[in-house]
Length: 245
Image (cartoon, rainbow, N blue to C red; front, side):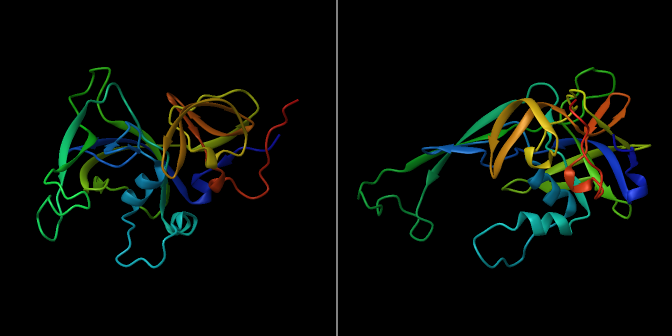
């Protein structure tokens, strides 16, 4: 059995975050024919890029460099899942030739617009304290001690403005347990070094995210209502896994 470790002593701070999108939030979770749909779950890679203010002015190549980019960032988020029901709106878009502004110069030669649809997440915002089911998305953020989590950022294909609220979890003391644990957040399976017992998958590029999961033989922070799985990227070298016996 490995000894617990303090994330703060490792130069990390842990925050419970709540995200509110103040406009229609769109990213392509999947595409079927001419429909591009947004699922009510935010991939932690997209969230980490947005919160870190990390983007490319010029990008060479056609292969994403997630590993290199995430290692260079000062903050790493868990996936964000909604609190309560998320409403969605479908927008119809007309595919027009951007050069000629015509619809009759398509290969088929007919003057007929190629209609498509975007299914996006409706705006949400704080409705007040004590309602029991505030809107928005909840997640956790691991950040370097020198990093100040932003109060506003932009997210998604159209740079949707988002507002963020933070509560620091302290002391952030990680414990290795061989018992089955269900974290209070969605899980990126690439962050797990223990055993995944059950999960509810959602397919969001670039890979699956588990909206709900049960894990054992891994590291967690337990504090009040918060049960936070510690990504393998933050477990110090030499810290092993619990015995399953």
